[in-house]
Length: 178
Image (cartoon, rainbow, N blue to C red; front, side):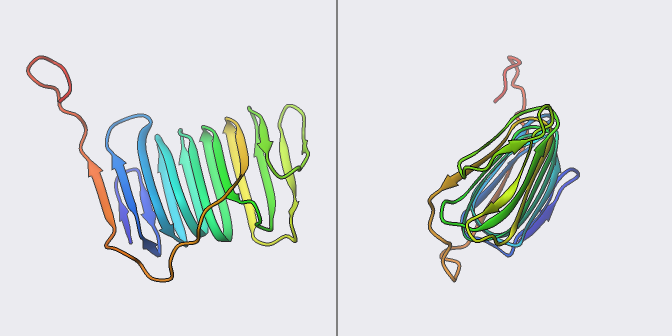
């Protein structure tokens, strides 16, 4: 599945849940759930929230935050934001190698890894027995790496996926949005 707009490119192997994209300028939401990778999402000026993503993930968001929750098995993950926080949740029993950084913000993690770098925090290390690479980066915002619990997606798609693109709100005669 996939789509492309003037500012967003999205591709995934399978969408079991919903994907909702709201039009508009500045911080327009993009939300999705139950997505099987590989997932590629390149966009700008969006607040991204993706839940129950499985497999490889590549997200690049200029001017907006990214919240990503994954389910096992964990794949290679790359999340980059130029201005906005990055919040990743992975199954607590996952093994992976992490490299995370921010130029203007803080880094938190639930895996007991130490942050280095002072004013430009960096988090790197091996969790569990290692595994796929997890890269998290933002120039201006906080980075969080959290433990989560979530069930893997089924081997076969359970239902037909839904993709919704909402048009921008239009003003009424009174000047208020409809």
